[in-house]
Image 1 (tube, protein in one colour):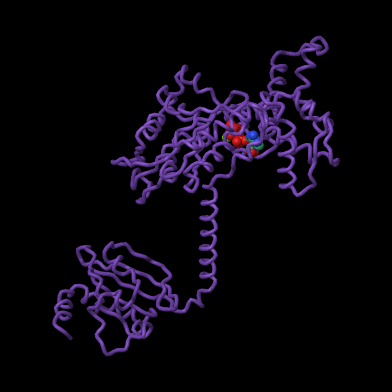
Image 2 (cartoon, rainbow, N blue to C red):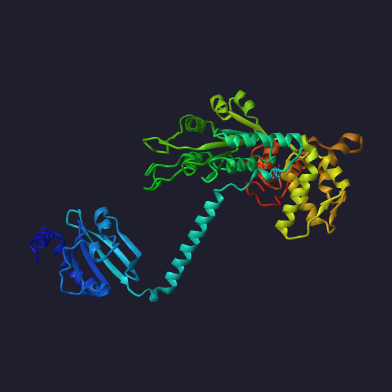
Length: 485
Ligand SMILES: Nc1ncnc2c1ncn2[C@@H]1O[C@H](COP(=O)(O)OP(=O)(O)OP(=O)(O)O)[C@@H](O)[C@H]1O
Ligand SMILES: [Mg+2]
């Protein structure tokens, strides 16, 4: 043995004494292989089974060598340095895969002096069910990651924003110009007018198109969780926060676009923090002591009247002005009724593609009926109404009679006004309940059953809507996804 090697080994007295203990004899007999390294990652003991597995020729001394020299890619040095055990892992030993366990070794005072690695199984065959499960999970993970990456890509292009009316053409032109400039955009408009569609199209046409587009819906996330969701969490920020930093949506969107949906629902308490990111590009994860800088383009959207909210104190004026750099107001469907034919054509094509059924058209009489309606849920509502009509009717051309829901939605109000005396006087509470029921039904139809949107149309909170549904004996008929259709 050369002098250098002997010198090193004499320094490892502590580890050696551990290695020579009865414990090691047990490892020797129990496992397919066992090896011990010191804190510097040098081998201090290795059993014959392990040597045989790696094909060590037996003439050269193995003790004292760096672990990676003998077992490339070994993680024992890391375990000896970190003191963190790795109880179960699949390890590539040459051309075979083995199941290993890595345990830090401590001296009497609790200091880490090295690490023990054991091969639990050298024949993965015996673990076939477990291993195939592992491979399945790994492939599921890869699929999930791919899907996540896809979901961070823009879903729509400008060509999908259908409309030939001057109002639609103008909004498209404004959005195209906004795509060329790297500035904050604010999309305003009623529910279902295409704000999300346009946000995706702007990102896809911008210089950030190849970077992620990340969406946060300020209305869908409980106030207490929104801060972490947006700005991230520093390691160990609070009990249960974990030792790893959790990136927020701003960080995930770094280099790309953050679509801040329903920005009008952003709690006042977070508005200052948002302003700081917009102004300085600086964000402070929850519990962090230092700020981070990010390069994110924000596209915000809301169906609320932000100006009015500023006046009533529900929205910070400084944030409003910072968001309002490039406002784009999307016209309601009422303001562009001339687009109804082309929208119907486009939406019926989408429906046919989705359902695999034959393409249907709408008759002139039906278009007349559709044009007479108010469309509080705009294009989303039109899509839902057409979908219902398609499922209801067997005919290729949908006539006016395929749209009874439109008549139902506009009908009663007109009848009431035309013939007030025809209805007998009822207790006020009953009449009010009936009117509420009717409005809620209409709102749900307009929102395609999405309660958060129905609540918004009615000007009440989602919780209030649920309360009323229960109180008025209206059973919810469709699942509440809280997302757009
Ligand atoms: N101009 C349009 N051309 C084609 N489809 C449209 C158009 N505008 C909206 N849509 C469709 O209508 C539906 C609702 O649009 P979107 O989700 O973008 O609305 P929104 O303004 O974000 O609504 P909300 O305020 O309720 O979130 C989507 O399915 C979208 O594809
Ligand atoms: Mg939206």
